[in-house]
Length: 205
Image (tube, rainbow, N blue to C red; front, side, top):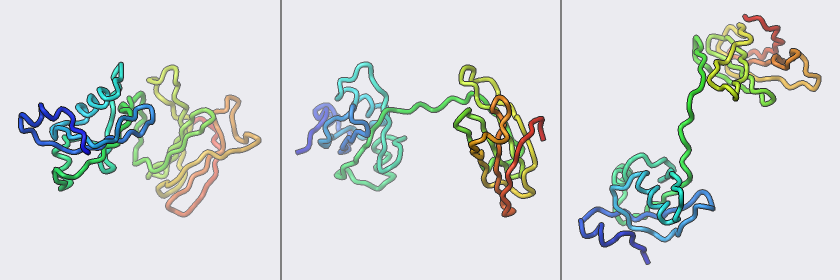
């Protein structure tokens, strides 16, 4: 048996309807998975309001929705049109708390495409490799002052061909680390077929 949401209001105005089943990705936000008949004009925002209403959620939680494996960025009507789905089909919408777009806090522009990147878990130092064959070792982002620029600790011509992979080399003896633990053994791989291991000395290229 189909449960109809706001049937009187929507049917009286002749609005197009879409049959939807809501499926929660997070257990604490589960609502009934009984099919609902909703106005086809609804977008992510309206659907999020609906879920909050069904949950009685206060304060409201913004939700995002996956339809057929894709984030819903149109109205239900437009999505059904693009997928050539008729009004009798039941559209499953999987929903979860909206993840806000991350904020850019710092930037370092390279001279060529960045083709490889690695981060060291112990301190957050960053190693990049580019299509110009150059490897760059950067200081970690200061989480206390994230807008402060990262600094290039070491820049060197690693290979004559584009770099395809870079890595920090773990060493039980901490071989190649400076007193503050900033520098370490590095490895680079390139389209030239070479694997090279480096012991940065600091002070630039």
